[in-house]
Length: 310
Figure 1 (cartoon, one colour):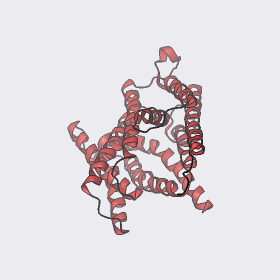
Figure 2: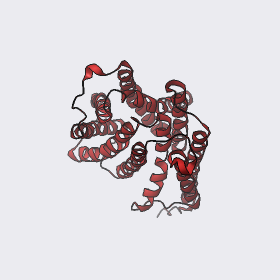
Figure 3: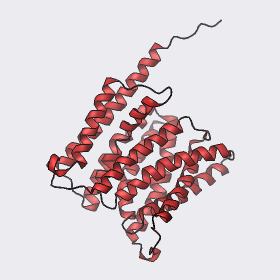
Figure 4: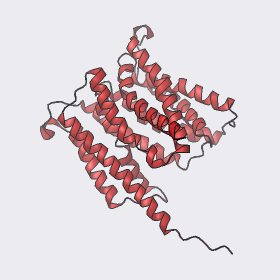
């Protein structure tokens, strides 16, 4: 079991950290929303067919409604906007900004009915983390950076984790199938439909020709379907069932560092002191927030007084 756990965790670190570079390669010659729709349609069909063949029940209309809402927020709002941003923003920078998802989850959890209130450690983590984001993508006149980040891409990256976090919060009480992988397959199919609709409405298909797609983009898309969506999500689903959530959540610390390194190594993306400092601040803030959450959960568990058996 221990060997399987570490293999799954290592796969999650490497695979999900590398997807940002694969997205960059894919959107070089495939429109962003169309590429994401193709990715999740293929992955969703495979996951859904697999789980039905394995004996999972046919989802209800209520299940599909919940999957459509969650899939739209996560895959259109989250992944779709990241894909759009990576047309103009380096993949490593994109990964670092998306690493702020735990900040938004902590904030939104405060307003959810029955949600946990942030501790002072969480608040410190939020302030520090957003400071790191500002250092990374803030105006060059203020940050003193020689590297300018495309403003439109930066805004998309700031919105993406907000929508991803909203979808994640909603999914906690949504009427989803018990099977995690079946739920993921349904979310992928619903998200693919939403992404394709936006692709059509934004005119991505006008003048687009599959014959003009480069081999690098095709390989990026194939990698995202097979490794990013299938291997990564399967490893994540298995870890949720077999490992402590504190261990599973460490992917949020490692993935942006993997993405920054691969972007520098394989795509010639800039890696300078400012990016390194921002990475350390953001990842450190994520660690602080997750640690504060674990401390709060352990404290609440100790305060629960068991009822006497009557």
